[in-house]
Length: 260
Image (tube, rainbow, N blue to C red):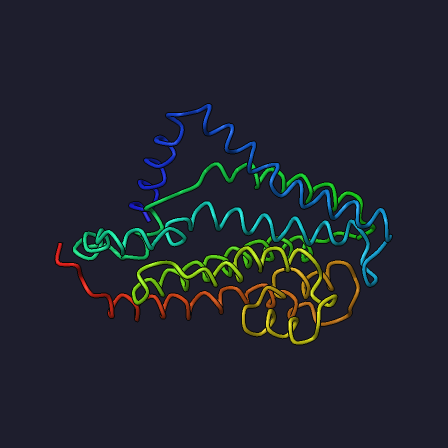
């Protein structure tokens, strides 16, 4: 982990060399999800609720998924841009170093300008929590934290899977965006508003339902159940991430060096 934090420090210093550019990018990242949130707000102004979900309940769902995505995109950007390393043959250099390729790819690129998206998500989170008629307790706060962490695991896992395909296809496959950008846009709403097959797919295959929908049922007192069950649900992302790391190792073993 010491190596990872060195990567982190170097990337942060390099991006802050152009502070005006960094600030403008951060502001831009703030307003990108803001436009989406504005659409959400005006939709509820027109229709009142969405299949029994109020505006602030959906706003909490929105904030959690966007916080998770911004953190994952910031620290997992190396996997999102991994195709460049394979196409140029630079991945060969990572293989001859006495460190894990996972750590090296994680540390190859950070997008600290995503702090703008992170700030926007935090504002929506605080606003929604302060306006919800929910009796907050320590278990609910723990579950809320685990929801965000769970989302980070899932988005990172999807980035890793997409990067692994580059060992065979060289270029990143655009279908991965269906599960990153598309997954983010879909999971910002409660899953029960969609068709059943969509809900099942994004609960048991790519478990975005474990990020927002299922834990929110407990936090918002919409469904009774065992507390332990709801405390374990947010760990679905970790269960998803572990096989992704295994698939990555399989991809590394099948990588054919350029000889450079």
